[in-house]
Image (cartoon, rainbow, N blue to C red):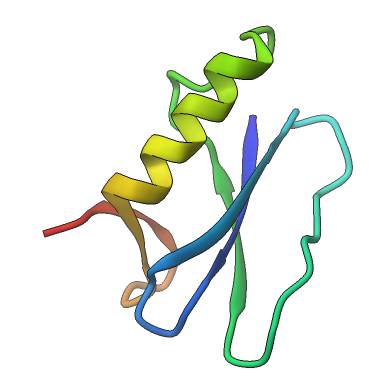
Length: 80
C-alpha cells in the first residue's frame, strides 16, 4: 500500500490516505502552508485488512509519527 500524507513544514501530520500500490495516487485537499508527501506504507498496513483495522493503523500513524522532511527522501519518523 501507499500513503499520501498531508503535513506541515515541521512534519506534523494533518491528514493521511492509504491506497493500493496499483491504484492512482490520492490527492487530499490541502490548505496554505500544508504539503503532500507520498510514501510506501509500513508493512503492517496491507491491502485486505478490514476498514476498521486500516483506520486504526492510520490513526496510530498520525498520533505516533511525523514526516521526516530533512532528508532527500521523505519518510515517517517516530515522534520524540
